[in-house]
Length: 312
Ligand code: 13P
Image 1 (cartoon, rainbow, N blue to C red):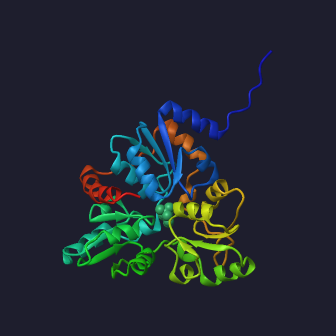
Image 2: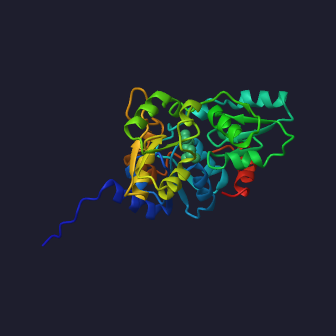
Image 3: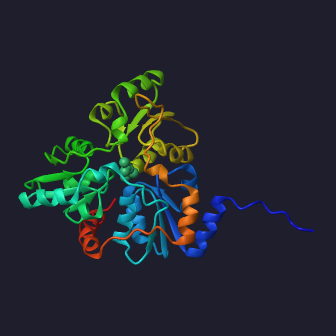
């Protein structure tokens, strides 16, 4: 008698291909729940950079946006780095063009350039040190007090770091097109409905939104904060994928997505380009691959390594 077996799901197929390819799946906290659930590691940009560097797999399937996969290739160039969808870009990375930055640098050769990891490899290659939202304060504090600093490309994160460190910086006029959609009015109104909720916001939010927050931090630090805080309810002011991770990590707590003026939650369309179907295709075809020209890769590695050497 034939034994009936359950049909293979897309998630099963991803797991099977992962074994066949000796691949590791790294996923950002904003990825769709189905991808987070098949990933080997889910985290913020800093954690993902460390994981990518230490990976011994032959293939890294990077489920995030392009600059994150590029960083994985820069720190681990002998690995095949795949993305489910190469079109998963980043508005912040788009807001700083390497040629413009090279011109600025030539005119201001004494200024230290701190680049938020949300930028292209070509921009990283021009920077003195990279930072993420998880370590930006520490990175800026590591720079001698007498040096002038240019912070690229996120002016909101840069401004928050200036407030935290008391350090003046020149700010590149870039923003995250998703985070700037959160407004003071929308978050304030939601707080009236949930007076006991703690507000947790990403530093890419506008100052008027950050001022309402009980905690401003990277996506990974949001997990630590919500886990250890005594409150039961949290309003999460960042991309909505974060809520899946938080609900998994803290099943006894209530997480409410931060709204915009027009929507009850806020999605990054780039992060949402990745699907399980595309993960299967990427592992089957070993494409699309992320590559970085070797001269840019070598130059971009230096400021990334400086950041990683500072520790978490
Ligand atoms: P982190 O996950 O490193 O906090 O940054 C996420 C991000 O890129 C926000 O746009």
